[in-house]
Length: 203
Image (cartoon, rainbow, N blue to C red; front, side):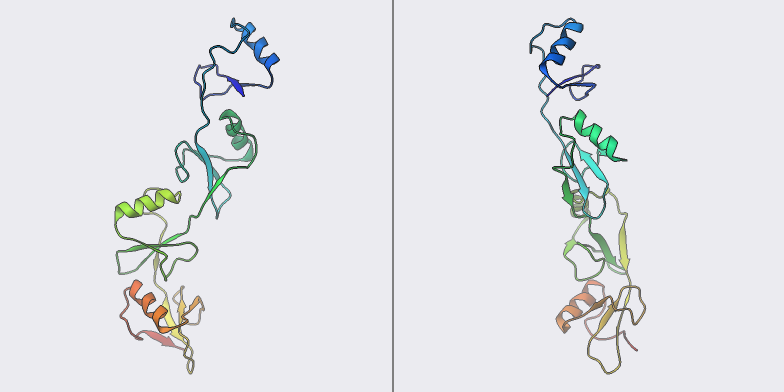
């Protein structure tokens, strides 16, 4: 496609020529020879992306995860694609997992999981640099927002061996059942609890 920019900026599209005839008429009208001279080649750059958990689409001039443009509706999105040399469709949108950032109430480490904001941890971010890099890759702002502090409680029914984790801190809420002692102890370690069976509420 060939475009016309009123300002002379190659990344701005004020008119798109549908065919050669329209293009040549436009050139003659503006005092240009009816040929293909003077066309600035501007490669299509950037990408469209979205969080898998949310319908909002973003545009990045560099790579997925960076928010240079946020589209309020479909019309604005389609106009943007047209102006940047993309077809007017929903193809090529990169999906990024936003996931959940979480930490224990008494421990400094921040963890990340695809779906759940409690142990076991899928990723443990060891320092601020690692944390910010991870957030950038997942389309999150470069700050400390949206980090859930995990509290909850451990509980089990009298006469039963299964120990449960209640994310809301209320004994009886069946958020997660520990399949074995190893998973249970790792869960306690990540939340800063002693590696034993203390503090398990019986109901």
